Image 1 (cartoon, helix red, strand yellow):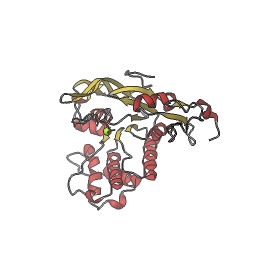
Image 2 (spheres, helix red, strand yellow):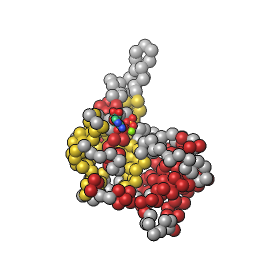
Image 3 (cartoon, helix red, strand yellow):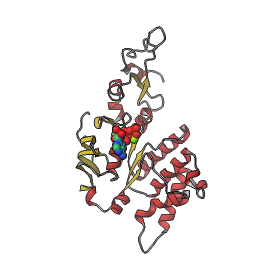
Image 4 (spheres, protein in one colour):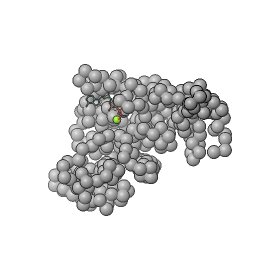
Length: 299
Ligand SMILES: Nc1ncnc2c1ncn2[C@@H]1O[C@H](COP(=O)(O)OP(=O)(O)OP(=O)(O)O)[C@@H](O)[C@H]1O
Ligand SMILES: [Mg+2]
């Protein structure tokens, strides 16, 4: 499944049509078509500066298309009231900036703003959503602390809590695992999957770790230079050829010992005498390859 065409299976509330995104005279994404599959976890991967955040920001209406459109339930985002969009789409940007001096509790509570009515500032539902978001992200103990004083990882969990408190059907997360230690990375990704599986949330996340992407994505999108190079189930599209094409990296793709899905191992390593450590791996030499034989190996 390759190409810059809408190829997602099933229905799609959020879609892009001939979307062109640019900053002044620099075009980053051109004529891109995309259907975000409903009720699935979609993960976008691709090299630095290829346009992942730009695309995500446009999907969340933080960036206005130069041409083409983002559609929510068939209507152009540009035609929908901001509050309506915020009730349906939650976006965690790559580098969010907190209001100066704000406390953790107040920041997370801001996630509820799209749901608040002028005659009722704070409802029981708001209270429940915020405390559940805090509990799920382990941020309740931080509630009174100023956000500026948190560690990078604590702060990242607070932003995730704010996005969860917003309680939207669609959740767009730009590198949600940044700054997190490995245990917290897994915790956040498990949480995302839990929200998807238990509550049917549609998630689009940008991740840099290809193996985490392959593990958590139902639908994987590989981007390069503003284009979608491949998309589909990770097991169908992750190959050494794709990793070479997208990242210019030689690798070997073996079965993930835990899930049996694709796992990308960079290499082959070059020893000082010029021979490759991957020379004895079937298909491991010569600039990277998939190792189909290893799929049956005892991992
Ligand atoms: N506000 C901006 N003004 C001008 N150019 C920008 C702006 N934001 C991003 N760009 C440029 O757009 C291109 C794509 O950037 P983008 O942030 O979408 O990349 P990315 O794929 O998310 O990269 P990364 O993996 O490093 O986060 C880059 O060349 C970047 O320099
Ligand atoms: Mg980015």
